[in-house]
Amino acid sequence: MSTVQTLRTILFYLLLSSSALLWCTLSVFIAPFLPFRARYRFVNQAWCRCAVWLSTVVLGIGYEVKGLENIPAQPCVILAKHQSTWETFFLSALFEPLSQVLKRELLYVPFFGWAMAMLKPIAIDRSNPKAALKQLAKQGHERLGQGAWVLIFPEGTRIPSGQIGKFSRGGAALAVNAGLPVLPIAHNAGEFWPKQGWRRTPGTIQVVIGPPMHAEGSGPRAIAELNERAFAWVAQAQHDIGALAADAVPSETSEAA
Image (cartoon, rainbow, N blue to C red; front, side, top):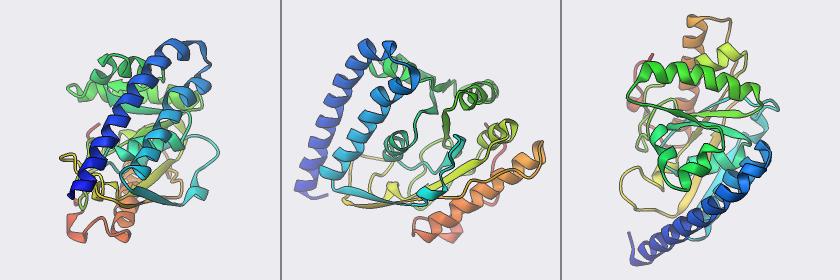
């Protein structure tokens, strides 16, 4: 990474961290008095838009989106590829209100965690997969019923660019049980914002939003089939934008939460 890009990266994180501290502090005192949708816009959407803007202006990481017309009017379950922090910022700014699955420990972080707790996240204990799956099913169904999008990264963790992890069935199960589709999303953010290290490379992230996918029937078989279909679409989309080699695709998806 060049000296100029190193300085830009340092500046970016200084601006990002200072804006987060300021915004989360304001949110703790202002957001409790706002209705939920306005609270989401104030706490999360506005700041995430700022984060995406900073990454474009300071780091030189732009983006192009295809498939915006595929976003349904009614909120549903989003199954997105996970490579970096960038897509969390971007998707939180694009969809509102949005409830995402996150580690319970994040809610204990002063100001940041307190602000996040007001946005009705699904905060799971990753050390207890069975309990996490039940929590996702219960709270996810509640969030969808309240008119919120539910964001799930079915790979469970950030996977380096060029690879794809197995998809858990939790998101597909949530959609089937709620009678709603899943919305698959692919991107190559990891090429410019890698999982490891703090190196950031200028470029244009390609984001592809697929068509909503409905289950064919109900029950475990319908869940498995929908999950496999979403996985296949994301894998193909990743390959089409040059972010996945054909030999990097796992042979099957996962039953884990």
